[in-house]
Image 1 (tube, rainbow, N blue to C red):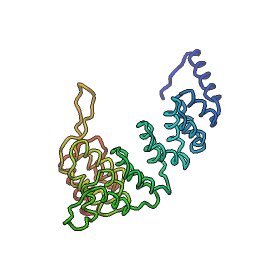
Image 2 (image 1 turned 180 degrees about the vertical axis):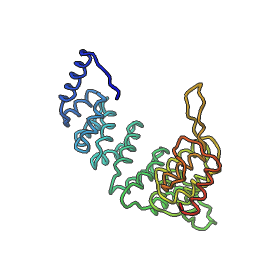
Image 3 (image 1 turned 30 degrees about the horizontal axis):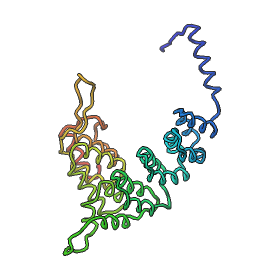
Image 4 (image 1 turned 90 degrees about the horizontal axis):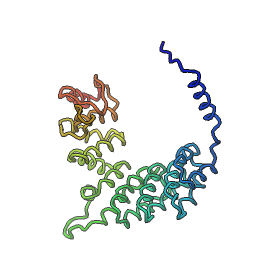
Length: 295
């Protein structure tokens, strides 16, 4: 058994440090407010410990014009709860892009139940393309989102040939931004799920890596149709390794193996992680497992 001997002085330092830790100030809303007003980023740890009980006290700080407003919003994302979600909705219209970004994070973490119409309205009016892409994904986290409303709104944003029949969901989704496809697919809309998988199959480079990550985050069986199309795709998506050292080149097919394993929970007979390469023979095992249903 390994033993580490410490000099008496060092042991005394450790004992004193332990005593200090055991006597740290109690976590209260007042402590959180004081930390935020002092622009002390230890407030983030306090916010996590307080949870939703700290949200109400943070809202006036977010609404202030003081320099600590940004830290207050960051902490509000960490406390969460319905009050945080309501303020997050307001932040989406803020003039400060940093606060808009934090508002998006708040709503991803704490969906604004009962406010889907506000998300739809902002989707129609905003000129911020990043925000527009996030809104349907936020809506997909609601308990009862309305995919048809999002598709109808997206349809109204495009000009369609007058001699063309009324465009259906497939035509609307084909021209929609990635966020709408992801969000409506998450809502359970079958045409959007098919379009999601088509985009996985067509994407290249960094865009493909993001689609794969999204598929794994969704973690529903329907995403496997898209991931399985990548088992023969050897384009490199990620390089892993320090400068001057041999690097692991993670390809689309490697991430597909990892993604399928994550979603399906299948045992392929070899270790699977997101940082390894898989041989053609191993990828063939994955294909066969998908055909046989894992048997």
